[in-house]
Image: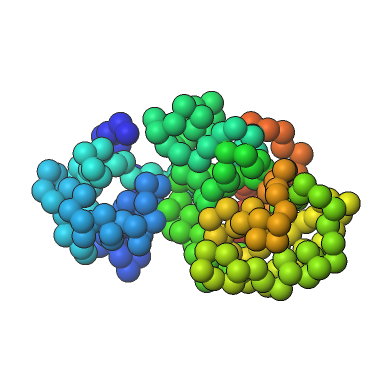
Length: 249
């Protein structure tokens, strides 16, 4: 990250006093961490203010230099969110962590992090934002936010398969939440999840002796993949953004 001498405009609220802002909020608004993750990083001694290891509850004042694991963090007033069509073969990692990272070819106007993941062999809607609080709220399992997928498996779908998928499947030492599953073809179905276990749909199908051969996410909350093509993105604004924030608050 690059440092900057520009001072962002700070609105007064209960966490801001005479231009100061709580460190966890500063990190969240910078898009690098949610507030919860920011608190964890601060507690672990990974955050410094003007070269001094920060403590929980610390305040950042205009002109302070904040670093996270040695990288300068710049407060950002330009909070934005994008819908991106992740193609097959790309992975949800940092740019330098993998040659197939989504950020190797994706160029968006502001640095962003992805919300949730799609594995390398899956495609479709991926939300990207520099709003750490929004990202955290979307990923909290207890909030039951809907995510919709189109899935094709390796053999014909039976009524028993649909029943078991919708009522709950035992995977990862738990039973998945009941969900809506609708057959769309001999081996294709749509599924709406309200949780995000690791490789959940693939694991659910495998537990029932099916193998996923195609998986595309087409909706998250009120955000639709729509007409986006692989590798394309669009910014979420206006009523669509207002509704998304209403859902996650």
